[in-house]
Length: 95
Image 1 (cartoon, rainbow, N blue to C red):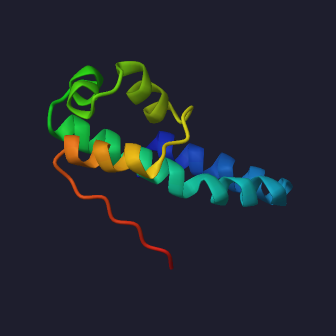
Image 2 (image 1 turned 60 degrees about the vertical axis):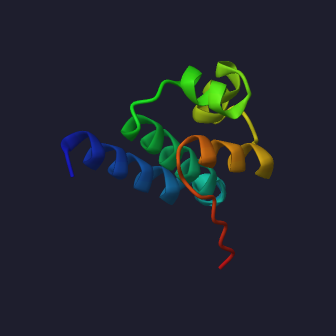
């Protein structure tokens, strides 16, 4: 872990200690941000721009941008088209 990561983790731990509801909200959002992170990683590995992904999906660059920034609540259809555009397969697990 680098110094920035260590500092972030320390601040996060302290904030969670001070505010239990913050931890609950953070945990509730974790799956969304994990999905976004995986999608961005896949796009970058393919060396694709947001616009290229949007064209393959039949949507707009702004839709991809909003999704990647966490400002869009995607449908299953959107995620399915995104996964195909990135050469991936969408798999949903409920554990």
